[in-house]
Length: 275
Image 1 (cartoon, rainbow, N blue to C red):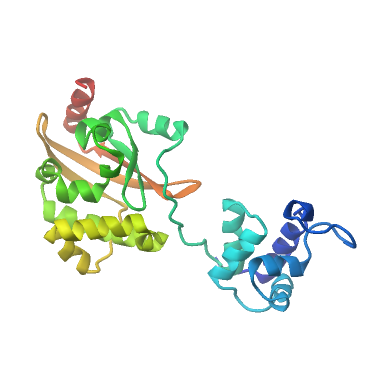
Image 2 (cartoon, rainbow, N blue to C red; image 1 turned 90 degrees about the vertical axis):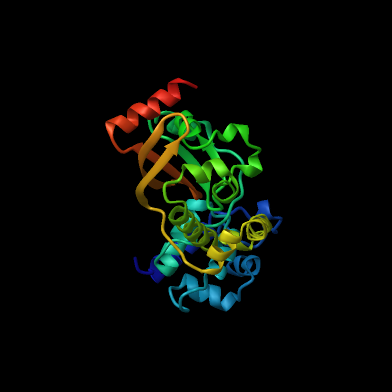
């Protein structure tokens, strides 16, 4: 995608004209056109009137992401409108923003529940598990038995002996998890949040293995792959995993673990039905 200065100018003028000045406590007298004046948008966005005027005229150079964020806030843009603003101005979507949350919608939970024989979960950019299905509870971890703050993939990987014992290649899995976690929290800005800093400090203090991996500065992409587990009741289970973005919630990811073979699917179903 490429930036489109002319369309950006039209977009800014259009949204400026839709805002009711009275809703912002601004005077209504002596306004020749509806909406906000350019100087009012510039003041709300903490940019110069001249530069903002140039932006609406399709000139003035590419704005910084920080300036665009302030303009989006000044124009009261929602998430989709903000993303469109970034595409027009810079030719790409804005970076993912860290949005701590503790729940998912009932509709998204029903999506998870539809995977009867495939463990599936919703995780945040900080790798907190927010929601899961029965298959995930049966095969991976029964997250409902854990306090919410302990439903974190890194805490489980480095501090739960049962999770560690289930991995065929714990060292390789741990290295990949840390690399993806680093990429996710950096891209989303979560790495500077107090909650994530506490998690990193805790793991560095309590796990020399995590501390060594964190110092490596390696980054990975999750994407898709294969995972082999040793389940205490069902024995060996092969899984193929795929990760998906959640539309409208760029801070969340859906991960689905499909049984690798019909025999693996039978083992998963047996575990689910035994619950």
